[in-house]
Amino acid sequence: MTTLQIPVDERWLLRAGLSVAELAEELREFLAAKLFESGRLTLGQAAEVAGQPVWQFMESISRLGVSVINMNLDMLEDDLAAA
Image: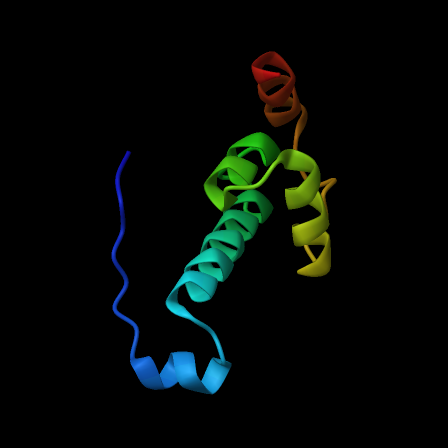
């Protein structure tokens, strides 16, 4: 597994009222949602990136305005095969 490092100015954290851990969790969720929305990851893969069970990730992306029903049939088959 590869770990990415993103420099963050402490002023951003203070302004957002987030701890480093909270920001990291939000960024993982946003990244996973966007990768799913763009079709680059399946729902299951994106949930794994977000560090959430699929049902929780579905709720998370719904709150972010990302449709859960935007995957193509190939992606659905991949998710079913992995289940």
